[in-house]
Length: 119
Picture 1 (cartoon, helix red, strand yellow):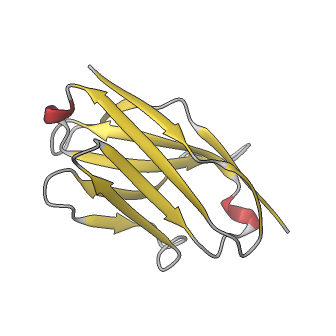
Picture 2 (tube, one colour):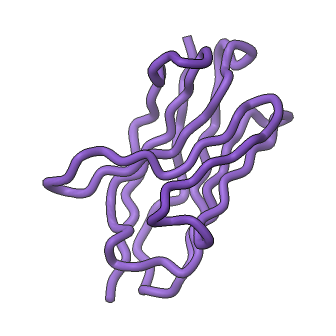
């Protein structure tokens, strides 16, 4: 089992920044990749970014590329999502998730943290 706890959401004006954190506990040695997802009201969940746990390879959706940066601190079992130049369309509940093996679905999810960007 892996437990994930997100923090760092909040209300920010357009153009502002927020940093989300996701602390993992439990069987963290089994994690292969961590991802950040978001879901806005009435919309499907979207993968925003991901990072491989050991190597640190990253990927981003086109909608956040150049504005968001994912990173991890393996000593703290924590993944971060630095969000800059925020736009109202970034408003959503943000979730972190853990994947335990290549090709597997994301097996474990956090409870989510609300990000609201005002115009």
